[in-house]
Length: 126
Image 1 (cartoon, rainbow, N blue to C red):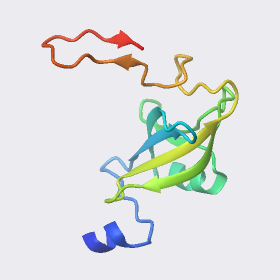
Image 2 (image 1 turned 135 degrees about the horizontal axis):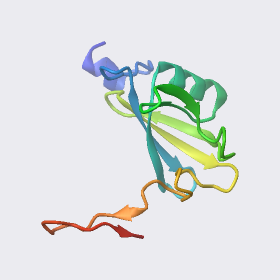
Image 3 (image 1 turned 90 degrees about the vertical axis):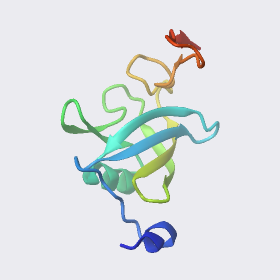
């Protein structure tokens, strides 16, 4: 597929990396808060589109998983977007259950701040 067609066309043509994965950014459908970053293979992408629930590929376990399968915090996808060169997707979601998406029990996986401008930063929670 040519760049112009890829960037401006209407065909979904995801560009998976050498491991067969595409990055998936998950945000809250109302607030826009970034909740998590995960990866999808072709099967996870297809299941997410079909079921409107968040499916991903675990790089550590090397297996397909549905977010919330054990915790009850399922990602209900209200909108999916793909970036300009079709190598990342954005999922806008409502989280069921207690609304937590991080395996640590937090709402978002992005709960630590990295101070900028220092040579040896210490992470802060916030």
